[in-house]
Image (cartoon, rainbow, N blue to C red):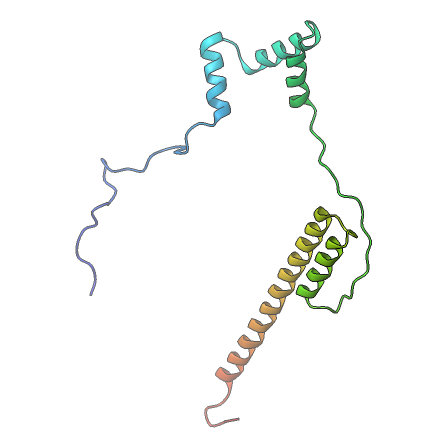
Length: 154
């Protein structure tokens, strides 16, 4: 039995989806529009003003703003760490070894956290590959049962 009622939200000339970007304008776009409206200057003019104030007028605030904008900040990098562990251990035991090493001061908490995250990622990849293999086995089994003659029982 099919539905014979007309939908209440059907598209009509009066009921159309909102065209364009419904998320609105970004903060940067709104700020630049306000700059243009108030001062009549563009984004490039703003950058020129910042550089001029920073280098010609020795404005420390403008120099800081320029450096934050122009020079990327460096990310901190954890030092290389070497340690021994048994690769045959289950993942949870590997994590326990890392926690123990952190508690003894052999590894920093940041290093321990990073290593545990790597173990979790490795476990997720392993689990996914195991699931794929099991699904393939089940599909092969199901296909074999479908193609088997009706009188043949195991």
